Length: 253
Image (cartoon, rainbow, N blue to C red; front, side, top):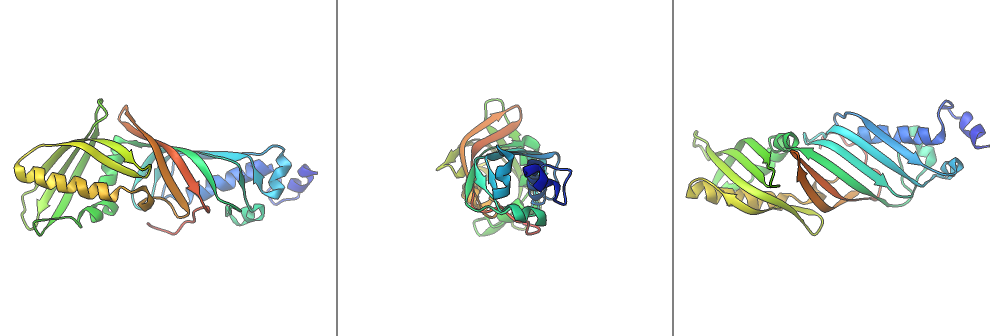
């Protein structure tokens, strides 16, 4: 009977799980400006459960994902637990959850991703709100280096007010997560002159205030990080994504 129902659908050459897997992959890809390989695999046993919108879970793996705000993710893995969806919405290209769910997640950022992100207008504009002794600060050519001892070397050129000559801020820091939602630079070592060190401390305080995961989560989702690992020029975040409703594309962030 199930085969007969799916055989009468417009996508009769696809089974129900393949149909939903493709729809999930397409819907997630639409949230990004550009992606590499995107793959979602839906689990449902028996397959007839899909007609009621009942799914045992699905696994999502994507790489080379560029967000509309310019931030880049090397890899993302989501393992979603049992979920109930509106099956009819699949045919309009939408994923509608009947109830909230959550997924374990693994997110990978490379050293290059971090450097690129800190030089995007999205991040630079947030940094430009910082002032030093009443003068504006203009950041450029920021570089993030991931070290073997799991520290991060942060370098940036900084122009103070109308001064045409940039100062070089050079800091070495470690990273940790607070309350599962705030990424923080800690145990920071500052180099340079007294003025450069003072501006470095102000910069780190400002960045730490910005690094609340709620400010970066997609609409309808909440992120919690349980562990951070730095190895082989990559930083990996392990945690949980709570999904109240499936995010919708809203254009550029």
